[in-house]
Image 1: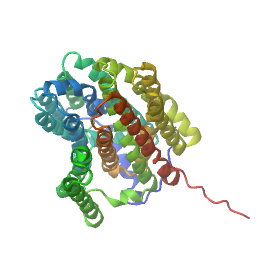
Image 2 (image 1 turned 30 degrees about the vertical axis):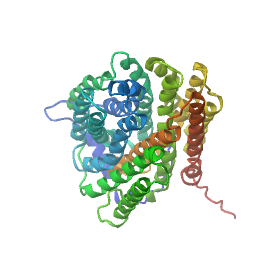
Image 3 (image 1 turned 90 degrees about the horizontal axis):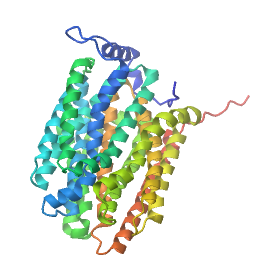
Image 4 (image 1 turned 180 degrees about the horizontal axis):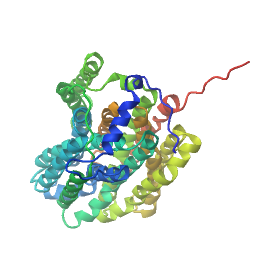
Length: 493
């Protein structure tokens, strides 16, 4: 058994263990019509198809951006970034909203509905004729992904006994992280035919997942919880979206422009109202009680800076190699591949053993250190001359960092919550992750801007990588103070 954190559980006293047994029994029962339900490991395999779709598509577009730009009249990088950020913002804002809705209904049906919406939107993306149309369909894709993600982890945690949940979540997170990181690789292969294939590839996978899921997924019942507040969802969407829009437009409008100031104030006001709704409402969009769980709060505070840097890292690698070095999409994807390939290896073969021996805080710290080392490596050594070894070595370091940090953070956050908060809690963590990824891409676009020369581009990218290394290192603070176990004072006789 993997060693999991011994969390503070102020919520658990109101959720008796009978609710755990109820969900596990439901997950291991039989479906209508006499068809047997999947075993826990089969449920894990099925829901991983959904998380692979959601995470793969989050970054598969990165290497396709130059090809999309050529098709759409050489669209600017700032405009193209919304193909990524529109998806990430909608995904982030809807994760908690759909997570709360999913708690009221059968998780298997919600999961299948999410896959259906994602698959249909993917087909629509492949037929887009302009940037605005593609961004709109990407938002629909994000809605399907946002419904899949919390319901997938809800199904997963309901299917496994408590002592196996931490390991199951780390496996789920590792596969999802691998899919997200492999996006540039898969995208590089597909762009050789056409950038439209990066969306069409989701259609057969989605249809297969729907068929298998309908046949095998267990009917996990919902909880009697309040409906989520749609106004709060709009507030957080407007707040995050406005902030990212302001960051992206800084280079065009200037820091001191009235437009940047007005949008920034409006977005902050929306976020303040959102927090106020959560603190005062009898039906908060995000239950403040979740953050009374010390280790859940710690995982959320680490996930923010880590995800900012993760989004910027993958985006910058794909853009740098194609625009500065002139590499093809395929060569770019293959150079990035070693990092993603280390994510499941590190997570599945090393993380559990290291957690058992040293504890989760030490493993998260090691992940942050490796990730920072990869960014510093690029910021120090990458120059105007193409060099595959430098890209690969940087990806190896960041890949090990992702494999240690991300699945462990997901395991910490999930294992610290009671069963009825699984879907909402995972939605909050993933909301933070996706919003931070969008912020990271926006910051990097703002830092890089549009350099006039190769030397200026090298300087801008170096500056961006140094900034991301510093942001990632901020995650060490909550790791030390909130995730690290509190030492109990010795009794002195």
